[in-house]
Image (cartoon, rainbow over all chains, first blue to last red; front, side, top):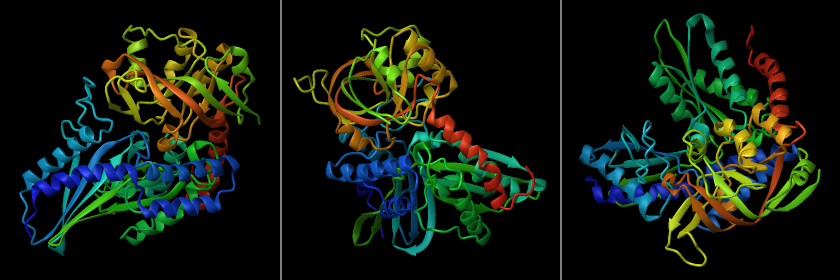
Length: 291
Length: 204
């Protein structure tokens, strides 16, 4: 299968706009589940407003949240796919820029020192583009994630040591949720990276925070941590928007990588309740959109 | 728990009536401020031609569309999506907004800290919480963008919105020392030990 870069550009534009407007079904289901179990009056009212907002965004064809985020594109390339890799990245960048200018949407991207906004949602190294591979034949998928800053500003890494044990990981996650309070726009998906190098650990926390609700960590130890940590953070009572309630997190997601004999790193990255994602899949039959 | 309908600007007396857990709906003028707006006003000596006395300021940087100047869009900007950003980053600007510009109400999400609580108490102000991330809904409360200042900072300009039925907003910090964020945070920290015990964490 040969991938047409013009189609990639078009899809990259479309994906950014779609992600900003339509929440994935697993997140909508997550809202229904939290709303059904919420016992705190303020928390319940806030969840109701969030659920209403999802409907208003779809009815008015509007953005769910004003924060257009930092654009992230995750590309997965299957077997027997022919594509010019450099051209692919250029096409994604162009699509991202066109979404910003043509819709238009707010460019939330600035140079970190001059703070200059080019009004393209692009800049040095932005959009973030990750490329990975799958054995699945004749398929290329692009997942788009607009990562909001309220949640991203609450990101942590701790290089714990082996003597601290798994207790360090558990304590760190609970303390991060307490420190975040309402700043991350809870209910959140709490992404936890365990192991790896410092940079891999942080990357894994982002992968965990942006994974669909209902998905499980492939590593059994990670999966067990997900369950116990989800229960633990939801007994703190931080609640929606940090104003109290049972619904602090939709879930805690964990991703695991092997690490060094001397290391025990843990990272936390959160995804806000507007947990936006969109996906385009290219096959020989054409392009299909989903989540 | 009472509900108030305010038309801006408001008086100190009106704001002092507010208690945490009350709700407020705003009508009239609402000013939009953001990190860059405040950095330029307070750290770089710039001034605004707007009179913010008695007004409500919201932590925002909207999505707007340039449509050219019309009666409905006097600045040439049409609001597309107006939402609210995390307030905590702008904590240190609350006091000067009240003392130097006479602002009375800050609207945001996620809450402000002790310094702002003290400013609200001493100078007469309140913090109203909007539901963050519910911007599609919030946009339906905005009638138009009436004016804009410091627009070289776009989208972090100083925006003047005309709003109708903006709310209900939750009074989450009042002028009597009340803060729902402090209450919830203290209660959550009190549950930390139990949460860690449930996780089988031995020490700490």
